[in-house]
Length: 375
Image 1 (cartoon, rainbow, N blue to C red):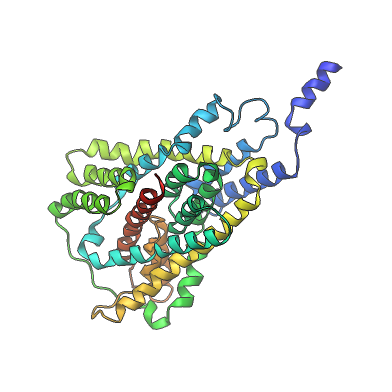
Image 2 (cartoon, one colour):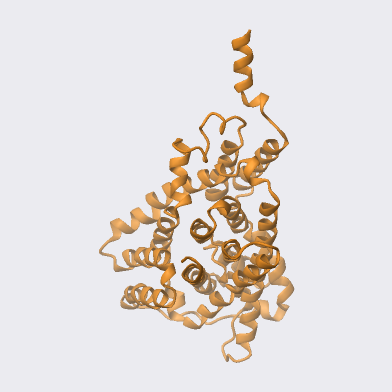
């Protein structure tokens, strides 16, 4: 009987509390959104499953959790905690990305830059709410809707906040189709939504090969602190565009990025143990992240409208929302919203320019913050 009681005391049933139950429900919601609503399933399914893993009562007490030194999950989480996984994700993104529309219409990079205003606005807001400067910088990056960059910066500046920051960033990436359209409709007129943009010129192979080299030199001279992310992004793109390293490019954008996505999703989810995650700071991070993402979307749209005051060939302001780094979802949202008003207007190719510019912009912003605050 004594042994039976001892066994029962080690089960999760005897150690469950409201916090664990709430986080398990949240994990199930993430899985449901990923599978049945198809909101970024490649992210939400492993993250949601990781939330379930991290909130089984008794796991920490038995030395099996993410935060238990020497456990398997702890070793897998090392790649998150030390910022190893994000550069590998960026390598895969670079190998997937076609920068042609950005090269063909370089002024659209300004939309990607404008969307980064959300990062610095949230940085200021976080300071006002009592976060220290390192925490505020890490929280601000959520506005770029860039999960890997958020993880990378927070792992360097505020490792204790990696879990809530990563969950917030990936949640808002997944909810792009829900959050952005109302803001896009609010800030544009019916006439602006049907603006047709000229078909981009054809970009030569030489331009595509030169771009990642020039891009690396320019961005890292501006923000040396972002070299790890930027170098991997542009290396991946060079592997793709050179065509002589196609095997490496295929590996980077398929096997490598898939494996790292699984590991980063499961371990970030598993880091959200209720006794660590359910805190006032985590709630504030989610609120600030939502505001940051909304501000980034709005500033991209408003800057497109501002540019139209000086341009003969007008920009459809709907593509300004693609300046956040959620590739390619925010570009796809520009296309979907635009076609509700004109089914023959194809904005996707144009929206990809500010979208990929936003990826570069968020990495540069992270490099600036890391360069200033990382020492």
